[in-house]
Amino acid sequence: MTKQEFLTKLEGFLRKIPKEERYEILRDYQEHFKLAEVNGETEKETVESLGSPKAIAKDLSADFYITYAKENRSISNISRAIFEYSALGLFNMCVTIPLIIIPFSIIFSLYLAAPCLIIFPILIWFKVFLNAGSDLVAGIFNIMIPISIGVLVIIGTTYFARWSYILILRYLQMNIQIVKRVRGE
Amino acid sequence: MNVQFKKGVLTLCVLVLTAHKDRYGYELVNEISDKFVISGGAVYSLLQRLTKVEYFSTYIIESQEGPARKYYHLTDKGKAFMEEQLEEWKSFSEGVYRIIKEGLENDETGIPNET
Image (cartoon, rainbow over all chains, first blue to last red; front, side, top):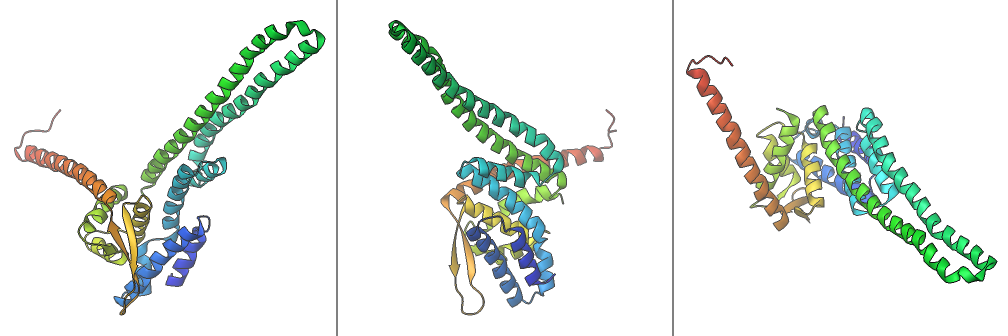
């Protein structure tokens, strides 16, 4: 492999990480090639001493997405981190994906259920109000119960979501180390 | 040598080499691969990672004879991390050394190793 092939391959493998970061990495390797040339190394020697572009990119990409998801929390970032990480092993993906889908579906259903707890009592209260105005004050106290449960569920789910996010990332990070060790990379 | 093991040691080597003197990537790769076999890519990935967590700050120096060089400077945060890693390494290597010594000494006494 020539210097140019090495750099092109590495750039190709790194296309998913942001531009500035990618340029910075490629810049480092270009500098290395230039200095190696000045020192009388042949291109072939230098390429061999650096290791394969694929291994370099794999190592960098997985790390990159996990740090990135940590700094910028969002569903798309975490799913990218999961995807990038799953590329490390198919078996791992079979284990990891269900582990991640479960908390997601719990969060999703709670977020759906909570507004119902808030909206329906209000609708019922209106209906009672329209039919017989006398129960109005007592009605308010009665609907307060499901409404406050609804609000508590929303708050609870938000905390649960936040902690799931952090725990999933921790788990992925720990697992990456294990996968790497098994492969002896 | 076990690769994972080597990677852990590599972090310590890079930190120690930059403790008193800012260095550039090519210099670090050569300095380390003179002593043991390691891929240059592993050194660069490590440098990039440690820079991202602010253990290193970098600056580029243009040179008249030859290409520009990016120097890595160990920050205070990086120095604290180095101290931590050094302590860990010391107790680890002392432990391993003692185990080796004890293991080999027993062999030499001729006592059977039956359990």
